[in-house]
Length: 113
Picture 1 (cartoon, rainbow, N blue to C red):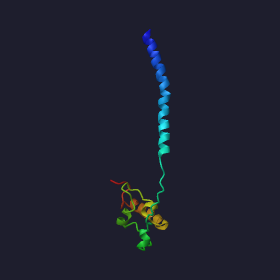
Picture 2: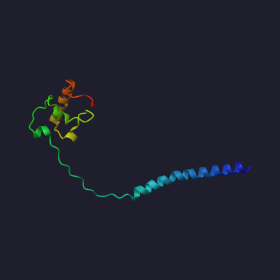
Picture 3: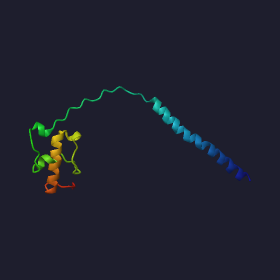
Picture 4: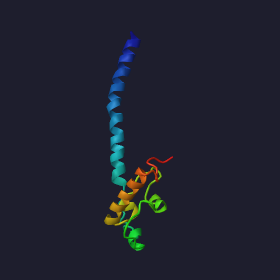
């Protein structure tokens, strides 16, 4: 009889403690967010990327120039975006067409090895 009473009491104690333990992490995270301080950091001034084709005064991106095209393809054989390469919009469009032509003619692989 005493065992059943002890288990009933333990079960009641466990159910009372369960919500309290769930509330403790919530208050701890709330305290952690209140303790954070913000610092006034100056944004880094990045060097402006210059279009390689405009700098070299190349009017047309040639699909046969594989060495140049490989610089604009990732290790996964994806065409890199303008924000990474720094090419202008005109040359990025030409570059995309040239890479696709080179892939179609099997000068550049579709998938990296």
